[in-house]
Image 1 (cartoon, rainbow over the protein chains, first blue to last red):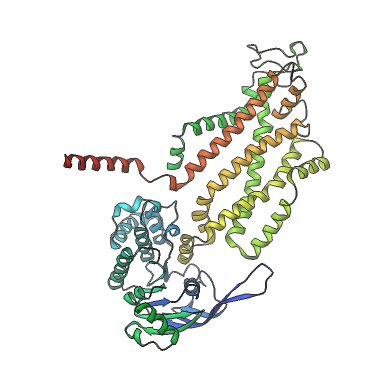
Image 2 (image 1 turned 60 degrees about the horizontal axis):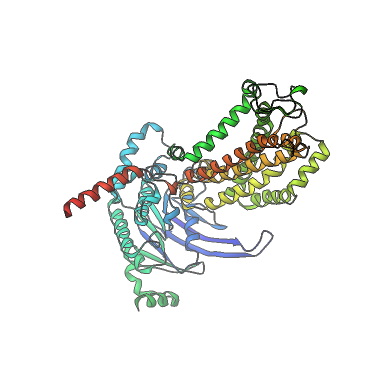
Length: 249
Length: 297
């Protein structure tokens, strides 16, 4: 479904007249099949989130191509939306002036007229229940909700787009461990019920191993290794081996 | 609308709003409200004290002080308000473009702003008056030329702060257009900043205009203006100090009202200081507390 082919990305370093550029992603190529859960792990600054932004079409690669069902990601603005997203920082993930309802409506309302408003009302209720929230939350503002609740709203919002794939960029990293577990359980449940696929960007190997089918290990903007979770112990590259050992010990 | 409701519960804000709106209305409807012609000279009434016909007395030419105060609202307040609207409008447009799209456009616009900001404001205003001649409209023109870049900078900074927020990123992944994102997500969060900076700039511009008129560079006699009234009263400062009081107190009162209103607006526009149904929730909480209490008893 998603084919990433030899993607490079760099950013300008220093001031406006500086010619120096920092290479963030180098020669990234991989395939993603519909419905699978791909984990992308690596240390901070290895280019995970940049790759995420490229996949979402917010930024464009410098060279190489990202093909979504044969079409370029982010090329056609109105048509993009086959990947949805949940981000890390729950304090800024919902507009502070929006109620929960408005936030979810935003992703429901794409390309639809106002006559289906009542439809949407019922849909919001269903989505909130779906992610384990009380439908009374709909009139609340984000600062009145807890971190875990906001992240659930964000998941509901991502599910509402009916995209087959959701990109979770460190979506559980800013939550505490018990809430992390609840959200992971929720994601696992949604994966089974709705046949959703995830691209799960994290630095937490255990969380990735819990939910993912395949894991891609990144280092310094390059793919170190892609391995399926069941064979996680048989990684080849020395970096991946070292990383796994640190988690186990 | 909820936010405006909370603003109306603040008594100081209400009082300030009342002062501001009544001043504006008095300025707009000056010919109907003013009891006398502000420029009519009665030499026999020089320095007359307050009477029923002339409620605040008469000045050194026997003109009605109250009428002059009311007509003075027009250049002092309404003129400044129009200038403010223009310069905030230009500043907002440039600030949004620079802050949201970033990159080369941002760099270019900000260098232009830097050039404009590097001129000292007072000196530039004096320079423009020197070139174009003395007069209210030239001061107002100078205000527009000098202020827009300042607004553009402040608004750009606050736009940038929100342009990278994750809800904006999410809207981008939904494929929503830039204009719609700006309107739905960035305008609401920057409105408090725009409101607060522009209203504080408003009061300082009112003071500046009065200052220039006091120096004789702005409004020309015989037209009324608060700063010029102060200047006229200055000559009889020791023998007739009460003539200073009317324009002085009016200026102070109006400028303070704008400041207090700005503060209240800032509080009212911040969603984190309010809540969706605070009263209801509080009531609910008390009820459950009572229930628990009775259970224990």
